[in-house]
Image (cartoon, rainbow over all chains, first blue to last red):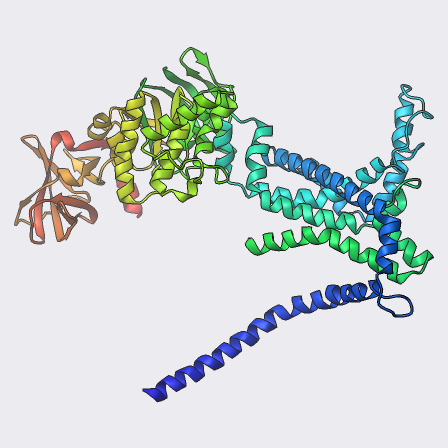
Length: 286
Length: 348
């Protein structure tokens, strides 16, 4: 009997080693990608943000960046939050409407921005919303408006928000619609039967039942907006505050202050960190 | 309130959902629609609920024409097969939802929700904290029933509400649902594919096939006096035999529990392709081969065969295998014009 036990233990040990190795092998590609493409550059950025150009440890980069750009940081978060709320509200309403009445054309229309690069969106909005852009020209052509008195939305906060919302609605809609379509019809029928109209079905049933997906979509959108460069570069408000990525670009290219650029990078990372933690928790839960 | 359907049709693509249904539901009674899958029973129910428009015909609730009325304006509430209790809301919120949409006062809502849940025997002390999925299947269906009843509907619709439950819970809930429906005095329409459920619960049974009504009547009526071959075959443990009666090919539908066996040593003589059925003193009889019995609890079930056509006989006595005279009382033998023919038999 003892012999048998030893053999069984040895066998158990070797099979658990194999299982451990197989497990490591399975997570290796994803882990390596995260380490190579995310952790390594981030570590570099983090270290760089605490160093002077001479290589000394310092807090001056943060002191400089916070002093110079704290308004821009607030402006960036403000723009991203407003755009996020708009994107989520629009996408939820649209996805709800599409869930109730399948309309392939409208669905296609709102998926277009998925395939349009940021820089093209920026340029399109510039042309469309400029002081004498397409929108204002069309409005002026009706004869009801004086082209010179119409505001140029493009280079204002509003233009920035419009571009970010349009660009991000495709992905959000795709995610939210997936969740809405997964809802069993009998839940919605039971609600209709209880007296709920279309808007109530979306607000009381679809959104709460898909809250996990909507928040995940929100976080992806939020981080993508914070890290976006092309749209603010083409539309960014010339007079007032800037988006953080423009500041980063300025520090890196014009001032060639890599320490400050790194500090800005770390700050923007921290701004989306809370969202990211929430996302990871949600993913782990589901 | 009287619920009437007049020549209601609804087509899905090329296949008919329901075809020219005219029906009026007895007031305060429970009507069961029974039929095989795809017979249109659920389509009819959903048309009444207002979940889809009908192609033609009219539906009236009392004096009101509701044919084009949206679901929420009909006062026809539904209990779903999968309960469809909203998982993100507490039991209280589930039941209160419809009342909130009707802008009722908070105290009124509280009172109504507690009343209705008490009547379906759900304890109300923790309904604001518990979610429906924390209850058993039978309880969930009672909550769903409460959600439908709290709105005081003109018509209660039930779409196979017991089919997700196990046999024991199902047979208990049958009695409970029936009692609840009667205590509320509400007109109800109950869809099921289970004939026993239909017969035991309903005041009025409608048998449907291929989108049409085959027969409608009191449970005893549709069970004992089937008017069509399908109605006869669908109800009970029924078997159809192709036989000759007075030399004429006929279809005989009989039910296992109605067949009496008498020992008969003379082997059936073959005079024709189909077994001949004789009539004497109110009984129809024919020779049949009986196999070994299966004990099914209350009776024994015998596999019987007559010239290659098989059927079951249920009897309390134990018979050894052999040839017997199988006899059916005339009022329990259902005869229909034969759809088989000499030529079709030759071809097979």
